[in-house]
Image 1 (cartoon, rainbow, N blue to C red):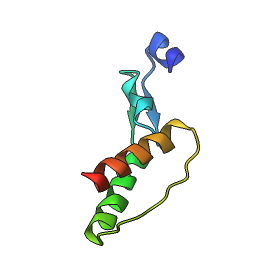
Image 2 (spheres, one colour):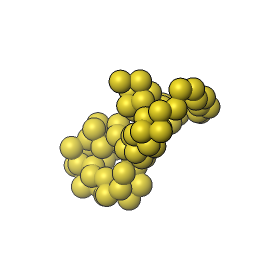
Image 3 (cartoon, rainbow, N blue to C red):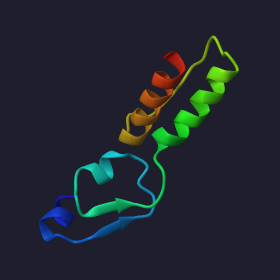
Length: 77
């Protein structure tokens, strides 16, 4: 990201699963979705089904952490 920003090179990312990828440089654009966005859909479905209990297991990686945060936010609120 630093190289792209310093060189002022317009960069299209076909699959940037974390929102942070495009937030850090005005020269980057994402053409796909994030894991957080797809997690929101799953969370809405879980909320509709009134699931009372659930577990998640994620890796310590930015896209997964974003997805987990979105899921918890949508299900709990």
